[in-house]
Image (cartoon, rainbow, N blue to C red; front, side):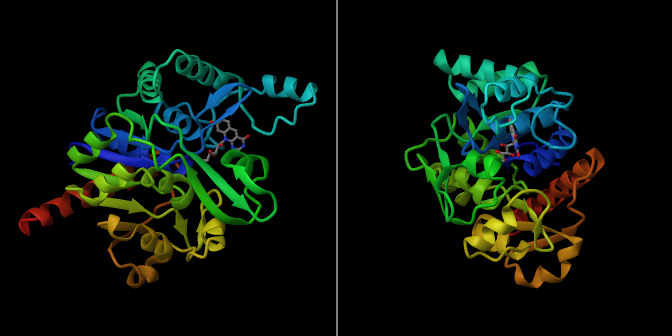
Length: 319
Ligand code: FO1
């Protein structure tokens, strides 16, 4: 069993696999490096949707249907916004405000996002290390045919990812540094997992940070990825639509191509078993739909076992 595991994750799909790894491993064995390209300010609050999705999922507090936000939350603030005539397109729940208020206040007091995130995780009893990819701001900007350049949440939530995308920009990524702890975790990892998150919206912002990409390229540990695409569709969100709009193959094989030699192995769904031949890295075929906690733990356990096997193999080959 790998002792130190790093997962790269974006939103809901990524959080589910991170949760499976968290439950399958000793509680301090996991570091989750989370996309912050979706972060934005709303009503004066600094909102970090992917960090919160992972935070709430690992704490067992996530909304069971949406996957983001909190279970049993209410919408009184949003209803009041609407009374004021505000469009209120971003559905911040009342309980969710607490997280966003604490984070915004701590940022205003000069604390880095990575410190705040670990503090929130600790206060919710999470034993895993949760890290934003960077303490510096990186904003995913979506250039659309219909509305020109949009910040990510406008594209994703306000326009429900319907506009056609011409180009993506990860603004600020050239000068962003990895958050403290990210490179150390990657360098000391026994296994690296790229979660089934949107490759271009959720994982690419992380990979755009030069030192993180270099750490992955120079990795000692195997890097495994679970496909976010099954039978040409994403389980949730715009991955397939967006990949097609950007001229990529919107298939599991297309995702493996996208990551290229960052991968030592790729997990695809049973439904895609025939596409194994189109994938240039090692392939594991499984049921990758995570409907409940049992599915998350089973898939995570398969990855941990495969990672152990690959590490043994590389030792035998003396690599
Ligand atoms: N996603 C939506 O589709 N609609 C919402 O109103 C919405 C509100 C929201 C509030 C807090 C939060 O942390 C996340 C929220 N999300 C919402 C999800 C989120 O914006 C996206 O799923 C991610 O950014 C993509 O990973």
